[in-house]
Length: 362
Image (cartoon, rainbow, N blue to C red; front, side, top):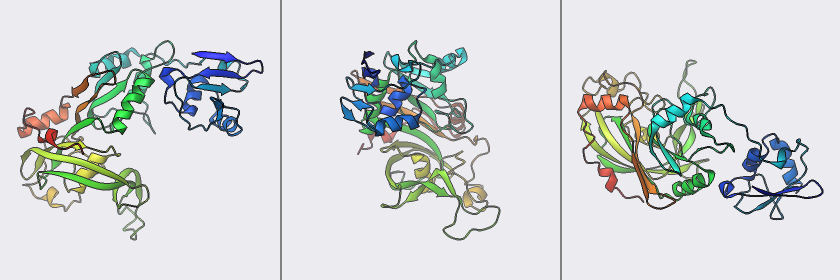
């Protein structure tokens, strides 16, 4: 870190390579963790914070080499050096991360995320991978960073960057669709056609239907803010989503093993797409619920075998992308135990040809 102190108490900081691409508010959170967001907004709004001499907003992005002007903040010299809140190192967290690691070099870590472990914290979620990574922080407080996300109950390949700059470079690869992601799932029934392209608009806030108080009037359904719904082009918050899928094997008419390649990366995209084509993923409590009188529940020939665990059968199987430092990253995650049991039960062989690998990347 390089800084210059002015006589008036103003300080100038030079943005480091590891801070390249960081939002200004996050930069301040890292450099001055005790500064409130409200006060930061005020000093930005009044022009007291400047980058290379220009006024900025808290959402402005920084670049390596930028000079950030910081006014006196009266925080007991907190600005004089980056303040680091060291995480409590948990040997158990470190061991768990090591056990999950399926690839690593000095820039990148790839984890095989298990079923049921959250990637990030939320309401009521205290144990998660993002928190576990805090135990790997170095003396300066820098730690590995998440590059993308998986749902709590989705297993498989999860990409981690060792530095903020590498996280930015990898994130750009995802945004520019230079990555190839292959997911495996087991779904209800057998899709027709057995291979295809799903192209839909998705938006948050799916209807929950009727509740215990009786049927609700049309248009007054409760909304689940975490569930995606099929939307129309032009609807508020609607985002286009595309997935290629292929049936690798099946036990007709009950179940099918699908390989799925998402082209876009919307929330719950594969789960919502599977439900939209009438073949929800096994064990999905949000998108796989069927009425009691649905033929798929009442017809013994179509019923799911009782030996199949009611856990989400969705695996981030393979990730292929260019390594920012040269070469290619190509990693594959094994089946989680509950999916392995299902594959064994149904006679699915993981060495079977996966036609989705030949599908276009659009």
